[in-house]
Length: 394
Image (cartoon, rainbow, N blue to C red; front, side, top):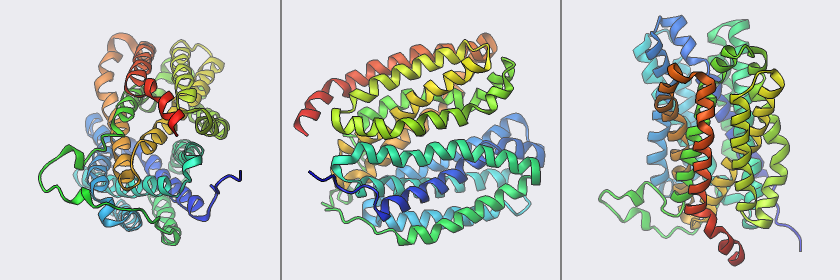
């Protein structure tokens, strides 16, 4: 039997658009704290807020966007989100003060939140059901690559040309992806209209119940991964492994890049558990190896295992959230999943950072191993034990 086509024009276009949107996000998020300090003399706490308030804007947009995307239309939300974040990016070029910068960062997060909710919804609809795991795996590479390339571009541009150059770059690439977004054909989905009937407050209007179990697991796993995003450079410096630290995201991205073609196909053939459990175990082993790293080799080996682990579990969990949800609520499922993931990444450094003075970065990373193992348990309880029946009935 011939496979349904995956690499359509719309699939390629939406993946490229998502890459550019995420590139803009990660390019700025890793440089914003130093920009606020160097340009406006911001304190450490205000500089940190300038970086993290972006996530609050993203969450705000996901809450609204997931609820309203079926009514507005995924393509309209995508184009509107891109236009908004391009216009907001232009405001970075205007000299202001730290308080105006905080407002710009919040609004920038809203634009990215709308655009990324739309891209996640569109790709869930254009990928054939029989190749959902494979398709989401390839699509989410656009995020993985942006997390590796964005910081490299941002730091290189600051060193060579100054902060203004990274804002101009972000503005140009954002504007360049708009024509591509306009060519994407919005998928036709049977919409039952039940989302618009409830006038009062209801959690069902903001979260998709079918996607919530695996999204809760993603929150726990993202909580553990947040200490990598926030403290990896500081940890590498503390361990006197600065050179290896600069290569972390590159090795992480390579591990994900080379494993994704296999893990997505394996999920489609044998179910989510066949990838989820090995991925979470690899994440735990990688975190342990990283916490004990005393050489560049062990440090980067930990990075590779974390790429195989967290990098693959993220796409598998997103696929599960989508497959558990009716087509007309895929937008809500997408926003539910990313809200929980963003919350884990956003609150993790604040909740877990208090351990650093007493245990150091090595102790912090070691403490994440039992948290990941706890994630394996709740994955089994909330989804894993039901996966076999779901696979047999598919």
